Amino acid sequence: MRLSTITNWAYGATVLLTLASGTTMLLASGAEEQERAAVAQRATFDQLTATLEEDVYRLTEQARGFAITRDPTHVVAYNRERAALRSVEDRITHLKDAGADESELAALRQALHWADTLTEDQERAIRAAQAGDDSTARTILFGDEYGRELDRVAAQVAKFQYMLDQRTDNAVRSATDSARQWRRMSEITLGITALLFLFVLYFVLKQRILRPVVRLSDVVTRLAAQDFAAEPPNFPQVDEIGDMAQAIRIFRENGLERQRLEQERDVDRTMRDLLSRMTQRLQGCDSTQDLVDVVRRFTPEIAPDFPGRLYIHDLRRNMMVEACAWLTPHQSRTEFLPSACWALRRGQTHKPVGREMVDIACEHLDDGGPISTICIPLAAQGESIGLLYFEQPGAVASDALDRTEKYLEMLAENIGLALANLRLRDALREMAMADALTGLANRRRFDAALEQQVEEAERLKTPFSCLMIDIDHFKRFNDSYGHDAGDAVLRAVGAVLRESLREQGFAFRLGGEEFVLLMPGFAIDQAIERAEQVRERIRTLKVEHRGQELGPVTASFGLAVFPDHGPADTIMRTADAALLRAKTEGRDRVVIATVRDGASALA
Figure 1 (cartoon, one colour):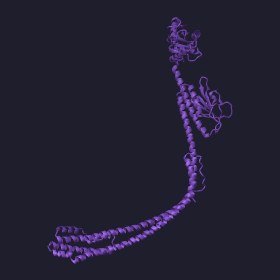
Figure 2 (figure 1 turned 60 degrees about the vertical axis):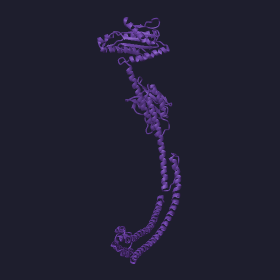
Figure 3 (figure 1 turned 30 degrees about the vertical axis):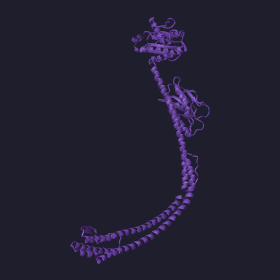
Figure 4 (figure 1 turned 120 degrees about the vertical axis):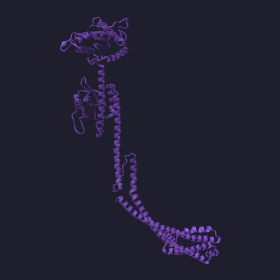
């Protein structure tokens, strides 16, 4: 039987007994209330009858006082008290309202009539005294007849009070007996209720509730302290305790699940913090090498069990080149064509071995065994600029693998964005530092490069050459063939200068038809030889514009070498002075700066 059924029966019996006990207690209280009402009524009647006797005696005293002293104040007082008296019916009605019955009222009404008779004698005596007949007044008020009437009034009032006492005693005695009986019945029902309560308390609470609840309480306490290792007891009975045990088991399972979710949330928060910190570092990178260092440092923390590589697209060679690796990956070559990776072909993540289906492996993977791989392209504006390659560990839960893949995709998105920003920044820098017409570095790049090479040459004590170049009679091309022809000549000369040095970035266009070559490490003999080679190549140029050959192109050269021609910081001015001499002496020649006093070249 379920506890609710047992307790419902016990509850119903207890309610019935409680109602019976309450009813008897109410009846006992009503009897006591009747007793108190009878006593209160007797007190009211005593007060009213005492007032009646007092009124009769006060009027008698005022009338006698006037008859003896002839003091008119007694008459005034008599008339005031006489006027205050109500009629017989008023006073009877008042007592009737207070609860007096007809026999009692009849006795009291007789007493009031006799009191009114006394009042008539008092008025007659007062009139005789006022007329000067003191003897008559005193005879009336002090005579035997007047005294007998006073005694009759007192006797009749005493009779009325006696009748009231008898009725009140009977009512009090009856109410007391009734209250005692009802109180005894209430005590009996209360005793039965207490016995029933003790039975329910022992059988239901202790045997069926207390013992199981004590065992469940220990489990609940441990579960409340997040100790989900606590095993709830098994109560197979079909009652509330069994339901409670089942609910506790469900609560424990929910707690275990919530604990697992909280752990996943903490891991997710940690990973997102790592990704956020990595993104901040990526945004602060000034070069591709900085980006590679950040990726090498943070990626093993974000995917601790996933070896991998970062590839960056080399546009010049059209190859995906490894920039860094972590956790020793076993497959994938260090360089491969973009077409060798399905992720780069399709522009989305590629996993050749998945949980649901098998896909085609990428060509850049070495045949090293069945290792699950993940290729995530790094794209910017629809163009693949890199690749993130990962190798999956052997045993990873599916949900953990899904979460890690999301982190890897977020990681790839951040790296791709940072790499695209670096490339855009480099492109903008190249555009700002390059001459749009010839493709050579411009004057801004030249100033920075000259300062760097001067500092390095003075620090290392190595030779450093500066060759100033100016196209001869350049204005003739513009005047004769137009500015487009002049631009064609400038592009052709720029191509010669760009190809004249093995090192990139040391040929500059300063403006107009003026160029300069910086040759770090070149001594004077090497510099002269290179200058003659450049001059000869310019002389042999065949420049055509709109199908017409523009004629011979020549240039003048001024060469200065550190330390032969003075301090490194004045090497450009010295070379410029030599260039002016070359133009003055006939153009199409190389003029070497003059060494004066064995120290410096002067312009």
